[in-house]
Image 1 (spheres, rainbow, N blue to C red):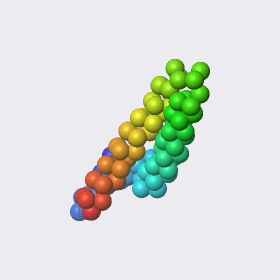
Image 2 (image 1 turned 45 degrees about the vertical axis):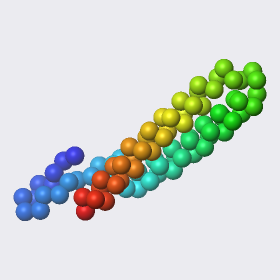
Image 3 (image 1 turned 90 degrees about the vertical axis):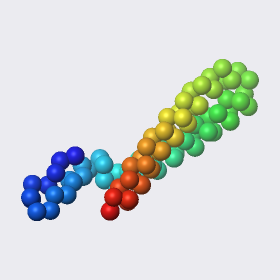
Image 4 (image 1 turned 30 degrees about the horizontal axis):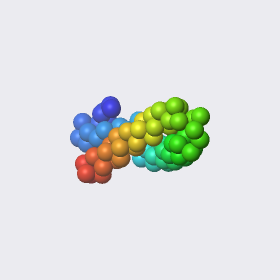
Length: 82
């Protein structure tokens, strides 16, 4: 992140993709992917011929949960630094 050029009040200039609105949108999208993956896990275990493909929805759930955790930790650090 870049610093503001004003030498008296040096505050961090937040990029658009690191703003709070972008983080909340990302959390919402990852929640939808998490639900979609959870439904996929349920369907894969219900249908016998799809049990060998359960790795794909599991990977979706794990990756979306990881992105959600990193975004939540970024938001928490931002709130604590205020």
